[in-house]
Image 1 (tube, helix red, strand yellow):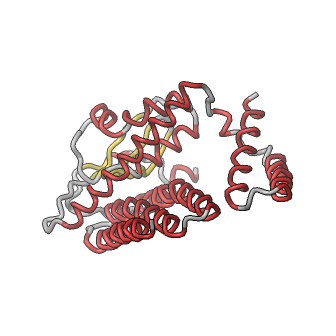
Image 2: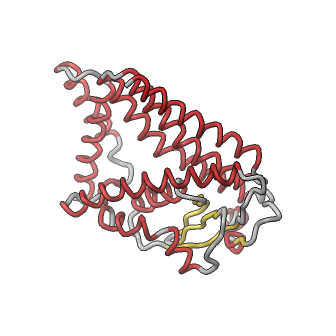
Length: 164
Length: 114
């Protein structure tokens, strides 16, 4: 079941990429269907990571919310870096902290780690089980609970609905 | 539309410049990575969107969206891999560092070889 879902989502994604790269006429679509189907068949032995994606009305709302949260954080993070780089005293207070996540699926952790890297002052360095090791440019919370609340939870509540 | 495209492209260039400045000013490899990743991601995204606004053809928009998606997926991944490798071979951190929870982990290379 997981495998079938993974194959369908992968096929759909490959078709969208193909259509964006080429012009949408009949010949191109037929070539795209054949190529996508071959890729899906040839990668059957790999782990079905996309099978963890949930497709429900709630998860679609969460995707849209997540995109807005993410874009806002990306812009805030860039202004933050700009501020630090341009100020003469270079205000940094860096170090590594541990945070933990409730997400179970690998793809959920991947999206979470990527989002953390692109948000203000944090860079995912290592992922071990439910723990993420994060380089934080300006440490505000010293303990794990505080850091988790500060860094992870704004994304986690949306990603939990999408990936579980 | 062309003016808007030019403005967005300029904003992208400004962020890319700030990223480059960050590489020069930050004290150690991890902080450089921070400045490098964030600024180049948004900078490159704005640059591509600006070019798409400038040209306004459907085919260019499709490719621009794809490029932005691939940058969003791969840019943080590469900086994560670089920072992880740097910490594994114990590249020293700046004196300003206040905390290193990752150093407690002793499963590094020696452990995995056993």
